[in-house]
Length: 296
Length: 175
Image 1 (cartoon, helix red, strand yellow):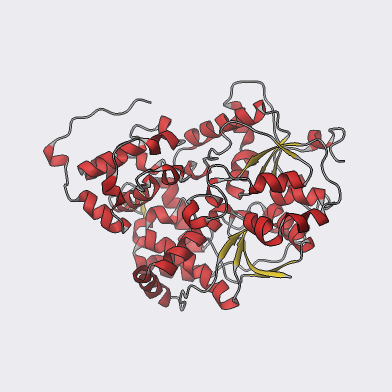
Image 2: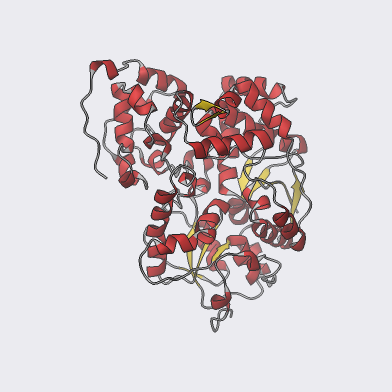
């Protein structure tokens, strides 16, 4: 049995709880014990608080980390953004004593102290490194047979690689291998490592959607049946605003369903589409499920 | 978009700016940039901005503090960190741009979207408001009840670091 403190952040629990449901249900089958972090809040948001004031961002992240330090458990993140904020802050504070003292002076006002006793993990590395492909394979009941997936990692699980240390920052393979494990095919496509550009939406929505459209064009060209990703920010961009993005391409309308990796894995584990919350997706999945011989 | 060509006046230059930034960054790598443009080639946003990432570094080294801190471009970073990953000199444009944003926010150059996002995080403890529809959806999915974060903790942190006063200036003006 593996134990982690589950850090949910904001977008997953309060906007896309279906991603949380899929993660909880698949991890339960893999004997992972999740402990709730009472009182945890925003991670600091890679696009917002650090842009305003670096020390405030460190203090906000450390405030969350302190909760898990008291639980004496490593933190498991489902969101790339949260993972990025918490891991960068955790490593910085562990390695820079002067900054740690300054942040602890701020935290003293809220009755907390950062000690530096735990590690920050992401679902991707917990699946790939801790649980392992063999163990996951045991739980796959109905593998996919004819499903072409365009894998999208999301920047904040990979970079900066010298600190995050999850996979190769430019040629990663962990998520591709996890997808292949479900029987699906991971298609090659151009601009695979490009950013979803969700983070600049609040500053310039037009540029953000335009850049996503470029990537979407290549996903279509690769004839992918769906997009599989990890991060709720990327999910918001590709699912919730997919229609707006496709419209920018000035070609015939099309749609490509989006899954989080846990949802894809859940389907192959025979967890029902309803339990995985697929009915809450904006891009409808009906056509995909009507595809003959989707499952083996 | 083509790059901006501009005349530089002596009075635009702050020769200490680069040292000030290197000091905040806690490393001298910034001073070692040789303007190869690798950051710009790896940047997803570079085609859509008037000042390219390597030019931001170039302008920093020249000391064009005022121009940089008033530009919208420094806020148009997708935070993908491709520049940081590729830089052969360890400059990592992303980190430099983060420091510039911190300074710009204090110089009344703070995009409203970022201000709003910061305000909701540092007053409620969450980046997203809690909606009754989502609470119902959580129940349907069999998810546990959530305890919202202690908003006062976040407010206190913002007060102690002084960010609270930045957030109260909507569009650069006092609310």
